[in-house]
Length: 125
Image (spheres, helix red, strand yellow):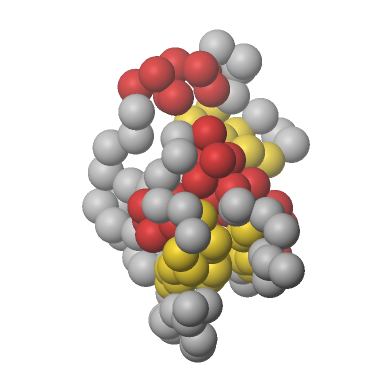
């Protein structure tokens, strides 16, 4: 009997009020769609869209294709009015901590936007 019937598992969460959903969705999508390891998926710069046609962006650079895609839908691109810096990770965009099981191994990732650590407490033999 196998302990894990799945080949891929992901457990994650984030503080961040209304930005929890966008942070968790972006990490999950990046992990699945880009097939990145969980640390890279948690580290990648984020975007948060709000109902008044504003899209808040993080990081010194964001993919031009992403910005063009957002702008074509009429969103106004902005930086948050508060936060750490426009040149580094910003806690405004959440603080995802995650555990992932992929390719037969567990891995943990703690968001560099917040304090904390994440790693597995046990190993499967």
